[in-house]
Length: 311
Image (cartoon, rainbow, N blue to C red; front, side):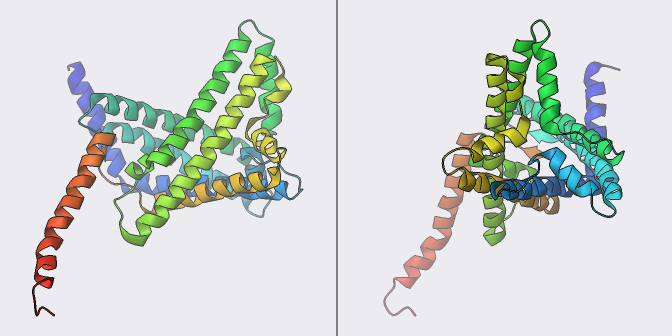
């Protein structure tokens, strides 16, 4: 069997899994679970802005869930669902289509990275379901201290900060460019406008928060101070310490709530079939063609309406 035929078999298996109703069902549940986590992070962030205690990060959200009746069951369900989402995201890599080979490679790498990310979240949620709790900020500080105490650890910590910052910047770009629409079924009308607004605001807010988190890691590496590497909770609290910080923190935390709602929308309108990736030029040409066709259809009607005596 040649390498090409092996690749074709892998792609065929991935596409089959992508169409499997069970995989898609778990993926939808995973998106809902991830949405709930983001909404809880946002709500905790808003409460912190009003002076309440709590960690505005993943650990705070998962602790909130584990403390409610039946919380452990919900955490186990979320763990399984998130692994299902990771599987679907991996199969998406075989679904990418584009006239530009570079975009195909980039989107495949992005989908594989997302798959690992969702799997990592599933592992963390699973640990909480087992009763293992840890403060995310303290965990990051301990990890940073360990890295700073090893040869070359400063560069490793800086790489972590740079990586988190790049993810944040990518999310901002994804929101502004509306590339997130590739993950959902085509929509129109008010539904398209609402989901589009949720996607833009949610991606930009989360992206900015992660970019600040990355800067904290870079600062920790630059000044060899592990206390500065406080993760997402530290980033949001840094925003809250700025002039008009409470208002800024409420806005950013609300963005996490909006991102959670976007994930609900993505679960509802999860895309089927291949992911067609287009360039800016192709999208502009498509828009111009649609406008041209619309003008051609309305032209005869307008001309008839302009005739004398037409009612």
